[in-house]
Image 1 (cartoon, protein in one colour):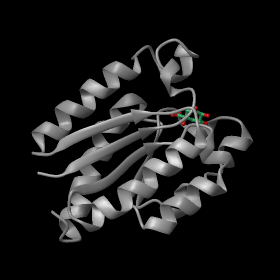
Image 2 (cartoon, rainbow, N blue to C red; image 1 turned 60 degrees about the vertical axis):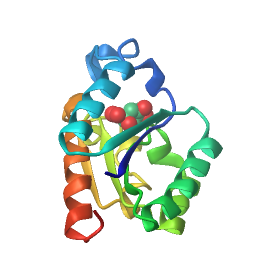
Image 3 (cartoon, rainbow, N blue to C red; image 1 turned 120 degrees about the vertical axis):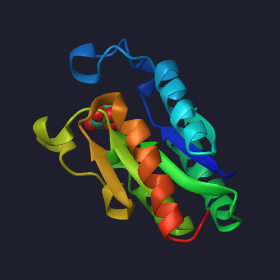
Image 4 (tube, rainbow, N blue to C red; image 1 turned 30 degrees about the vertical axis):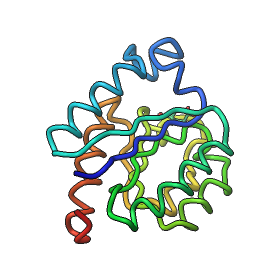
Length: 154
Ligand code: DQA
């Protein structure tokens, strides 16, 4: 059994209250339950986190890299929120520790404002799930676990 890390960036603590017409009415606690159910089905354990602080997210990513190499963690499902569009530091952190990441966006960022169309994180992600609502999280967990198995990391 390995850990699946699910990371959430700024403002995702407001899920369910913020712009429900865009992000839906599901809370982050509900998303955690969805993720826990899928991770358990797949025989692994979940570590689910959210931060509004770039440095804290960088520290979590740095700590996850060695856990992946030690075979204790499969990688991260990561919704970077607006950091996707702004943070070279988070992009470099993922690249720096070679963390396998499946990026998730709840909304279809490509159907929204132009500044949401580019993600620095996508450049270093194994794959991206966009615009499928919160069901993107369990889909991304399934993909992360299958990719790890293909890589011989389970
Ligand atoms: C988001 C999309 C981002 O553009 C936005 O800043 C968010 C949420 C999403 O899940 O759709 O905070 O990552």
